[in-house]
Length: 181
Image (cartoon, rainbow, N blue to C red; front, top):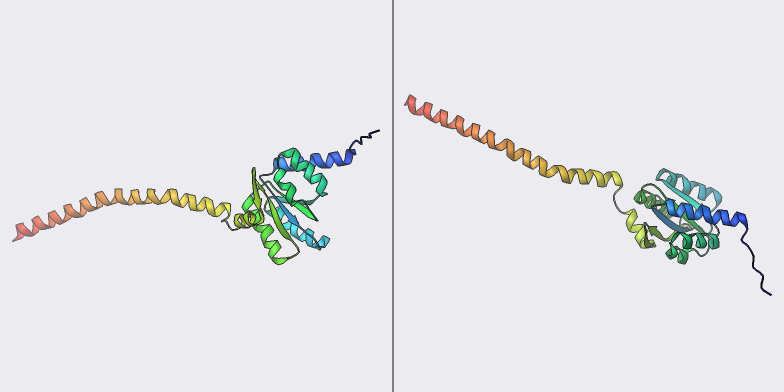
């Protein structure tokens, strides 16, 4: 005799919640928080919220089911032990920086890995992402790269009439000096 159990509605709702968050996120980072107090976890959430990220703790079995439902099977290998998920809907670089900064000040927080878009990431990949310049800096660099050739072209276009005027002025001075002599 085989008995099948139906999943409890509250657990189904949590799996659906996690799946929804995974689908809405541009990146998801997995971290271990073994030994951290509730206050330390609360302090971690503040800078992550400012970066457009949400740090949540779920049961690993439910998170694994949701990751598989959302097509992020690569997250399953990180969902062992006391883990938390950081869902990023804003700037993934800023969120990675905030998470890395917190792990530097609190050695109990260990970054395990994650996904960026559809690409699996190791802990080193998350740290490399955190080392990138912020979105604003990258946009400023891009604008500077576009502006540099335009500034050079404008300088060259200004030089042509200016040099012509200098040459014409020198020719007039030369003729005036020849007529005076």
